[in-house]
Structure formats: C-alpha cells, structure tokens
Image (cartoon, rainbow, N blue to C red; front, side, top):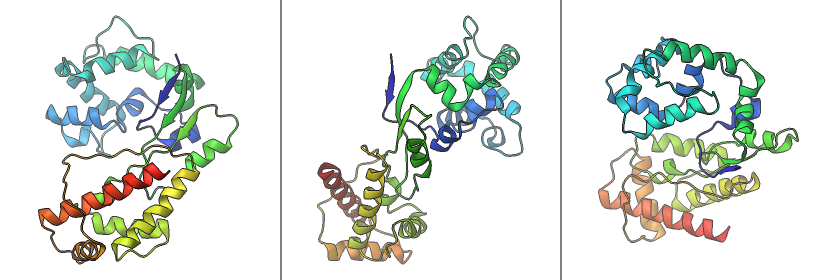
Length: 266
C-alpha cells in the first residue's frame, strides 16, 4: 500500500541529497525528539542524547539500555517495527544484550544504496510526504527535489508558524528579525506582520504547500482587538517588556484567526 504522509519530520535536505547514514545510531537518534524525551525521562545524561562529545555508538547504547524501560509506551513498539522494516530483524527484543548484534546487522545494510534516505522511502512505497517548515525557511530543497526528474517522491512543505503567534517566548523578537529578512518587510505594526506573513504564504504556496500545522500547547482565546491595540501589544513586546496574559491571548487569537482566513482563501 502506498504511503501519503501529510505530516512528518523528515529533512528535505537529506531527501534532496539522498543522504547515506554511517550507522544505526545516526539514523535512529540524530533527530528523533521522541526518543530524546524518553532518554531524558530515564535519567540519561544530555551528553548521551544531543552532546557533541559522545560517539554515535555511545548514544546508541544509551538507547539500548533505555528501550526495555519503555515497555507499554508506543516507542517500544515503534523501535521494534523500525527494526523489522526495513532492516528485517525479527524474533529479537532490542536491549543491551542484543544491541551489538543488531548494530552490526543494520550497519551492513546502511552501507548499501537501498538504505539511503530515498532508498528507504522507496522500499516503504512512500509516494508523498509533507515536511514541517517554518515561515522563514527558504524551501530551497523542496524546489531542488521538484526539479529533479529522478526523484519520484513528492516532498511538499507544510506551514508551521508557531514562532509567529507565541509572542511570549524569549526568542520572539529575534525571530521577527529573521521573518523581516525572509519577507523583506520591516515589522513594527501588526499590519506589517500580516504583510510579511502574506509574502511567506505566497512563497510556500508556490513551492507546493497545501497544509498548515500548529503546535498549540495552551489555546488562549480573547476577542480580537482593533489594529491600534494590536500595534500597542506588538510595540510592548518589541521593547522587551512583559505582556499580560490578556495581551498574549489577544495577540495569539488575532494571528490565528487571520491565518485561518488566509488558509480558507487559498
């Protein structure tokens, strides 16, 4: 059965470059935040999760010691399903006692062209994926993939604007600077933000984007104020001052409602 995955965290650059992975630890643990969270919950030192000072094998063994503790969690099942397909490892539970043998078997397969980034996707009959992309992303690799006739997998960007509407986050002001550069719009008023986002939405649409994806931990709602009030809220934040909960809710609601209308219009 073909796979059409409208939401994934695959790297468009790795697909464009048809990345070859050096070992199982690299492909499994380099960017999987679900596994990272399990490792942290198990008390594993951060150096063995995202640290640059430890090897892929050391991180892999930390995961091998953690997996038996995840029994009952989907990660336990996912881990064994990932070993079954595409690596063909069955009848063996993954853990510290079996890790060395599994490491060797999987690395032998990863050394072959069939286990490159695109090779694995082709084995799994992937026809289309939607990646997760920030409004400031250039989408250069999506364009590269679309222009390459040898790639028969559709890779479409998905619009993930979390950093736009989470005005309370510490990095919000710095992020707006990056959005200004990407959209070539100076943002000092709420309408400037609309203009910048419109330009980026147009760019995403031109690159094949047809979906949005919002990470909303807490849905704050407040009636949307007029632009003068929204300008004042944005000005307070740009000045480095703290907003009230009501102001945060007003801004968040205003951005989400406006985005929803943009999505409907497109």
